[in-house]
Length: 114
Image 1 (spheres, helix red, strand yellow):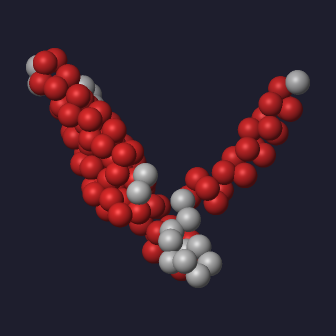
Image 2 (image 1 turned 90 degrees about the vertical axis):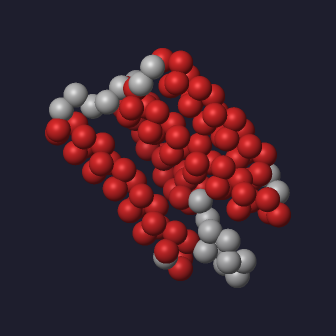
Image 3 (image 1 turned 120 degrees about the vertical axis):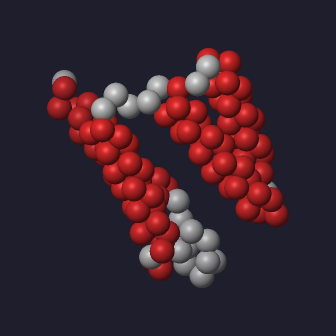
């Protein structure tokens, strides 16, 4: 893929990410914003893999396994009933539920270095 085509695809993906943030700011447009974000991410992934393809078959396997694990974890987490905010039916973001644990872990790592 030529550098100009890759740059154009990254530009389109960036615009879609900005539109996604704008759409996610309102409950009325959140579905459209989510769609823009997913489309932008798909374009960015395809552009990256087309302009800088993995060097070997094993590298391609790692890319596909990583995409499968990432999609499977998110799909599993969103399918569980305990991910729903009590009584509202809204999904609780994975980072929001487990962000405290990440903060404790990073503090522990910083303390271990001292």
